[in-house]
Length: 326
Image 1 (cartoon, rainbow, N blue to C red):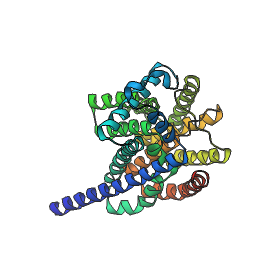
Image 2 (tube, rainbow, N blue to C red; image 1 turned 45 degrees about the horizontal axis):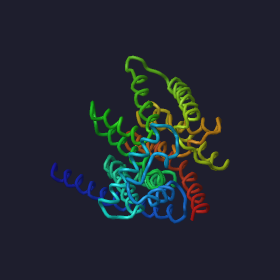
Image 3 (cartoon, one colour; image 1 turned 90 degrees about the vertical axis):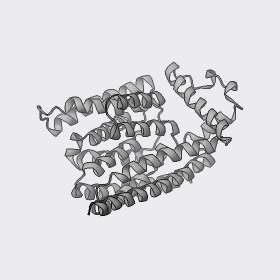
Image 4 (cartoon, one colour; image 1 turned 45 degrees about the vertical axis):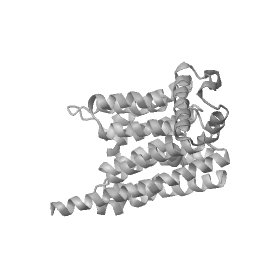
């Protein structure tokens, strides 16, 4: 019996790996689409790297001038791409495609192997596929290459590591991209609040998240830590809709680490609408982190309700993406 179960687990992991590779190729196709359509960060990355023959031609004045630390981060990333381009003897777009493939495949594989059982797989599979093929989630890997790398490192640290190794990767991810700082801050905030001797109600968690998310949105607007991406009023309403879905589908989510971070992220996006500063890229992070809550602790009822509620968001945003960028 134990040998049979072990073989089933091995087969599930192999299938998860194969589907992860297939998803990685879908992300490569998305990178190519961004490049040829001139959308996202890909075209600007390629233009920048192709403007310099090698690293010695590069200087910091070529960066955006967003402050020493951000320029340093971007300089390190660009140096790494220059080195990979020379080492692999490949074009810039090919190197960026490799990076997008690696990060997307790792996240897809982590999520797939954490699905609890075959019965549970059938229950969550429709939502699983919708989330990973949501344009904002795909853009997390295909457009924002640097933030995708940082996000992957952070997820690996949160799920698999403990102690000093975890905190080292926390620091590394934030060094690669500052947009990881809110996730790290929410992580520590959750464990500060999650004192077993004090049982706080849902409304207390929500109030604290509202306050902290508002402060994070103000800080982002003040220091321009995150680059805003414009979006239409109808798209903003869709984000508000999925935000309410994440917050209220299951009130227990806010007392789980992944649910807590997801709610905090989506609140930062929503407060960004109010102060007129766009954190729209965080939508993909919020959705995919909430998916891990559902994979990890979601009940069948919660998954069914969220799947039904999420389907209109997925269909409309997919149509929006196709209509505007294809």
